[in-house]
Structure formats: structure tokens, C-alpha cells
Amino acid sequence: VVGIYESGFYEYDSKLAFLSLKSSQEFLDMGDAVSGIDIVVKDIYKADVISRTLQNKLGFPYFAQNWMQMNKNLFSALKLEKRVMFIILSLIVLVAAFNIISALIMIVMEKNKDIAILKSMGATSATIMKIFIYQGLIVGVIGTFLGCIAGLTIALNLQKISLLVEKIFNFKILPGDVYYLSELPSKVNYGDVVVIVIGTLLICFLSTIYPALRASKLDPAEALRYE
Image 1 (cartoon, helix red, strand yellow):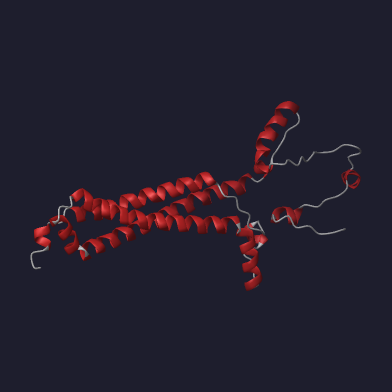
Image 2 (tube, helix red, strand yellow; image 1 turned 45 degrees about the vertical axis):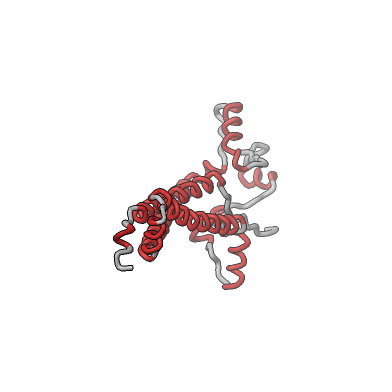
């Protein structure tokens, strides 16, 4: 044994050994033959396209497998987890939307007199409605912007952050024998980020409609009766 390697993938680290070609052929009694050829590509996310191209050119009895096919079960589990996380995060956004609704309703109740005065001075129901819609959207836009910046910062530096946490608290976040991965790689899908931002802003907008309608329908005479 010359050395021990760590790939970050427990299945490989626990079961895969590297030998010279000659030693492998002697060990397996294969003569000068080989059982397969590994190809390293520059862009790992194009491996499926490259493997299909090789398969079409080589034909039977040869076959080409990419790293995604070899770890199909793992990626299926990750896709399922992604869907579950999307549902959970959607529920969190909905809870935040209800917070916006409740906050705006409280503001409407506190500002009854001010709304009535504005209406008495000639402000239309549409104007009052716009005021509260804009107020809710400002809260939503600021929260979405800060959340997006924080999320991207963490995602782009996830490996460094996990290593720092492990160093400070002296424990392994991802034990290889449990999670298959000993490192925490991350890739930001900016398409998903755009969809999430747009969806969040849309929910924020919808959450402002009811409080704004309630404010716009306020009767000035009723609000100022005891003033």
C-alpha cells in the first residue's frame, strides 16, 4: 500500500483500490486485456451526453456508463429530498405571507382614523388600497432580497462553512458511513433561484390584497364618529 485516498464518497473510499495496469492484469489473470476504460471529462455535467455518444459509436457488445447512472439510487433519493424541501420551504413562505397579512391588518386597525381623514380629504378607495399594497410589497421585497443574498452566500461557500463548523465544534457534519458523502458539495441553480424569488414576490403581493381591500372599504363617518 503506497497511500490512502479520500474522494469524499464513502462507497468509493471503502471499496475501491487503485493498482497499476500490469498489477491488475496479473491479479485478475487477464493477460494483456482490460475490462474497461475510464474517461475523465472537463465538464462532469455533460457526462451523460458523452456516454450516449460513445455508446452509439461503439455499439454492441460494448457499453458506456456515466457517473450519474452508476449512482442512480443516490440521485433518485436526492431528487425526492429536493421535492420535499421545496414543499417545506413553500409552507414557510406561506407562513411568512400570513405574517404580512396579520401585520397589515393590525396597521389598518391602528390607522383607522388616519385612513378616514385621508378619505375625508378626497383620497379614493383605490389610493388607500395602493398605499397598503405598496407597504406590504416593500416588506416582501426587502425580505426576499435579504433572504436571496444570505442564501446565495451560504450556498456558494457551503463547503468552507461546513469545514469551519467542524473545526470549531470538533465533530463531523456528514459521517461517511451514514450519509455516503463526507463532504457537502453544492451547486446553485440560478433558474430555481429566479423561480423562487418570483413565486415569493407573487405570494407577498397576494397577501397584501385582503388587508388593502379592508382599508379601502373603511367608512370615514364610522371611523370618526367619536372623534
